[in-house]
Length: 355
Image 1 (cartoon, rainbow, N blue to C red):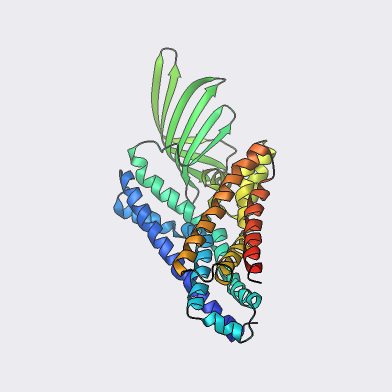
Image 2 (image 1 turned 135 degrees about the vertical axis):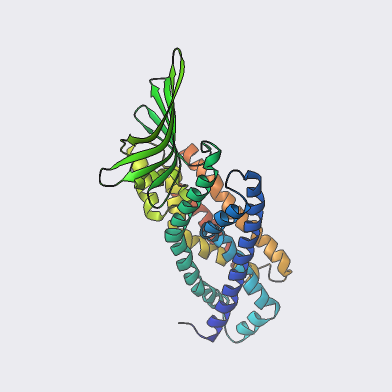
């Protein structure tokens, strides 16, 4: 399956991908650390920021995989082209198609590792990271409404800050309405799930009731909370769609469809994860077309520059088509398929120009 040429190409390309991924993660980690320093409060200091960012490394690894594959293939093949190793292989009877196939073979390992990280490590790590950060900043007051998740049940509107893997909710805000009038608002430090009784126990509850004569504030150390929300469902509500597993996205998208809620975002990320192997293969084909195609005679830095442009274009095209699917009513799967098809078409076109 792998001859000597294939192993040599695979070793060079995989090494370049790993170096690129490490460089991207290092730069992103440094920039994110500097940005997070502006949000230090309570127990969330520099050391906590380092721990928080370290926990999120699996998600960053998964997110940067397409760029690392594209640039890694460009750098690995480009270095071999600059040292005339690819020319020697072709002189030995290796066709361009056979060389590209040799690059695609180690891509299978990259796909397996990336999909495994995205399916198992990322959901657990992101849940732990969000809970860790939320608990550190909780002492400064209610959790910011920007993070977490919202959900409606009857006349109540809830906001949840985070949920831990041991089924402990962090930061539960409840707004109770009587038709259009806000009756009360409450905040609980945490909620603990009782699996036997299938209900939550809220701790550290502060409730404010709005009456005609004024407001009344009360505190409760412990308060039972009967609801249809279980930990599995709240995990889907609180966590960002791009951090969830394929199975979780499938279930949540169907739940949203059953509730009559727009599920395009969930379906978009579902198809992005399912079709990511094709996306990575398309980006590798584009990288190979830069090395073997019309750009083979330009400097390595120029090829990398064009590779970055293609990678950004791929991402922005997906980001542009996502809201377009909502606006124009076409399936989110096309927002994922069209950029992938564009990569294959562009790469094939450049390779055919070489004759």
